[in-house]
Image (cartoon, rainbow, N blue to C red; front, top):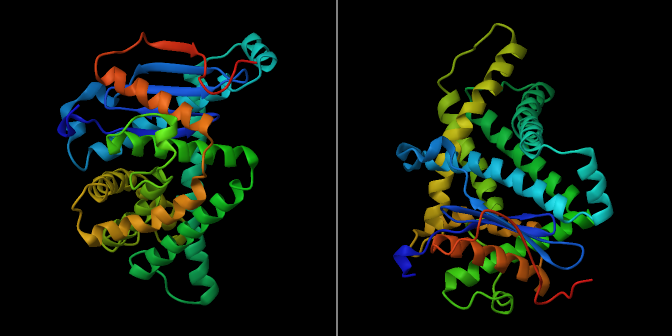
Length: 332
């Protein structure tokens, strides 16, 4: 495909595999215990049935975030099932499963956890900081939102540091690196093979890690601008802060929309230098969230990406799960 026709490809590491998404398709490739690859292909689930206004700039970012959360949890569920040894899988199948329900429950629980950890907790810690230091920290003050952002970043870094100690998460980070290398190989216009992808970096400006770091910066600016105009909502300070936290939730959507546009701009050639600087902290943090992958992990990422591109070019296989033999790992 010529350069203007080349679709954006995004991805996500999953358990023992990689999910790749193109504008129209959603492909997950997972390494099974016997060395073969389980590939699930389907159309990308669009929010709102593909309504045009949902693709407008500053709207599409929030829409993409919701779609990615839903499809991402679905991909994680599939990867967990396929990476499971056959005897454990048989027990799980015998117990019965309802994938859509499980995905919904997982998404709800994870979202509540994330909101509590990265929205409510930093806000509470900022309020407590003002009390402990005996300084006035009204939610209308810029300083309140600066301290809130510092706590948010600290919690995020602490969370990453904690989970990165797990061997399973370290393997997930290797697949994250494989995803980035495969996308670089595609975007370079060279051959899309595991061997060719090896030579690229594991860092990518359109990564979700960079997105989250930019979200914190944009959230600081938006919150400071909005809440400087919001008066005391209750004579009870605790209730006022609860209401402010609740008001922060709908703000996540415009924040996501703005961040999405900034991130896309930083990934384009000729981007202004001041914008590229916004991507640098996220790229630095990717040194934690990505690891150098093995050749067989790159094979998984390249396979998922190649199948997503095939669907974009009209060479789609039937929707569903396909098992293929690996060129690198012999069947056990």
